[in-house]
Every structure is written in structure tokens, then in C-alpha cells.
Image (tube, rainbow, N blue to C red; front, side):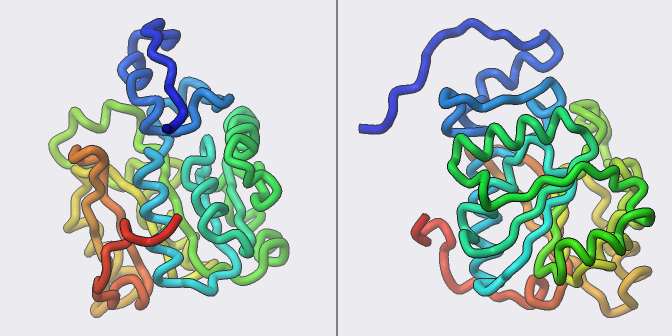
Length: 248
């Protein structure tokens, strides 16, 4: 039998984010083992099921990947799964808040992958000040992932989300910065993101024939956002197996 989860109903969260308390095991299945989240992380951490699926997909496409970079790593939701599914690779997480990194380090230890991850305190808004240093530090990057802040839960009130509002940079500058590290880039964006805008920015940065692959992400049959992929191996991929059948 699996570990029994606590069933207490005492919700310690402020009212404006209290709904996320009932989703705590969706965010981290090992929540009761010492997971730490600050207020921002409660609504910005990638649900574990989706983070696992993405890590499996990366492994399927890039089985020999040596370095994976997670920009805006937050509480470590994605970074932890990258470390789990790439045990022999270098995993780097970058965040601009020490409090987030402190939580991510603790959470990584809960999943016994803390020794496989290097967290770096950097403000990606000023990437131009340190990107050359970063290249020297981490070497060639196989895949760069970013789940940037969407501006809090208020994004849901917008019929169409303008991806130039994502932080720390708008879509175009964020992609431009990540393409300096690798051609294989993945973003997790709101489900109401303007897809025409995605196409326009892709062609502007990579040429008229460039493509962006967009996949709708669901957790418990509910839409959570879209995954946007750049790079030939991603855009040319033809699914021929169910990744959920892969061994953990």
C-alpha cells in the first residue's frame, strides 16, 4: 500500500491562494515529507504529473542529454524531475529570488536529487550581464526550459494572454536570450496565450520557415497551460509511443 496522506482540513494559506492547498499533492506527491513553498510558489510550481511527463519527453527526444537548464526554476518542480530522469546529466536551475532557491534546495532533498542539481541566483532580466559567464560555467546546453511568471492568477481573467507580459522578459526577448544557449527551447505558458503571436515571434527570430510546436497540457483532465517547443528534434517529432508507459 502507498503512503497514507494527511487528511487534515486546516488550510494555512492566505485567502487569495487558499484554493491551492487542496492541490498540494498534485504539486508534490511527497508534500508531507517536508516540501517547502512560499506564497509565490504555491501558484507557480508546475504540477508533478506534468513535470514528470515533460522530463520523460526530454529523455525520449534527447536520451544522451548532458546538460539541462531550468530558467525561473522556482520551487524546483521541473528541476527535480529533470534530475530524476537524467541521473547522469548536469541539471541547473536559475532563479532571481533566494527564498525560492532555498525552497527548491529543500524540495530537491525530499526527492533525494539535491546532489544532482546546481541552483544559481541570477536575475534573467539582466541576462546580458552574465550570459558569457554562464556559458563558461555550464558548458553546452542540450535543452533550456522556462516556466516564466505569468503575472499571478489574474491571467485567467484575460480572454487572450499577451505573452509579451511574461516576466522577467517578454516572449521575444526571453526566446532571444535562450537561443543564445541552445536551439532546443521549451516554454510553459498560459493556455490562453495568443498563438498567432507565438508564430509571429518565432518567424521573426528564426526565419519565415521556422516552427513552434504547441501542446496543450492537462492535469487531472483539466487544462493547465501550453507547452511550446522550438528546435528541429521537437518540431519534427512524430509520436510513436505513449510516454506514460515508460518506466520511472
